[in-house]
Image (cartoon, rainbow, N blue to C red; front, side):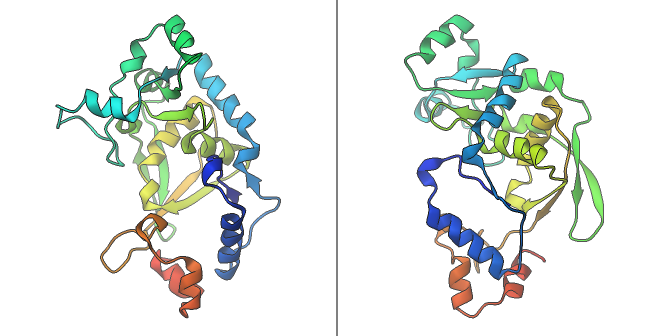
Amino acid sequence: MRIEDIDRSRSRPEFEQAIYEDLRWLGLDWETPVRRQSEHFVDYQASLDKLSARGLLYRCFCTRGEIARSIRNRPDWPRDPDGAALYPRTCRALSDDESAARAQREAFCWRIDMQRALLHAPSDLSWREFAEGDAWEIVRADPAQWGDAVLARKDIPASYHISVVTDDALQGVTDVMRGRDLYHATSLHRLLQALLDLPEPNYRHHRLALDTEGRKMSKSEGAQALRAMRDAGKSPADVRSLVGL
């Protein structure tokens, strides 16, 4: 159990309390004290520093609008598994001096140089994917499909990707169970683990809870919260069955 609150603008104490209440209702328990990511930015910076020391990061000053305009006339431009257009590596051409000078006056993010990173990664990068039973298979990782992914921003000093691989290693996590919507992200996480010399957990990506129209149940889509399901008479077993447990 950990609270992933690296984006402080979206974190609220009442949200955290609701998580605890929902998980207890589901019959789950966890070790304490709970790790809170906002208290461990120094750990994530250490991981970023290791990548930077190997020349695998670069500053990017492009806004989303500028990126969109740069590929506006390229309908065939490749996209990542989430549907976002891959970054065209515009800022990779900046010299170190120019990049450092612009960083004094402009907002920027840190991107991984995927082309260079792959040169430092094992050619057989993969992970162990477990099914709903005990069977497992080796899945070949394909981090290149994410392009030069963002690993940190000036206002949010760690991305989900760099923080979770760092946390998993520091917490001694051996098995990661999460939704299928993060299946492809595992390729990028395996790359970061290899580059940072971190342990490789086992992975199990469960099916998602879907609504009657086959869409993922999420807050952004106005889906019911667990509390609403509980108030409507649903049992913990009903909820677990939605994700194949």
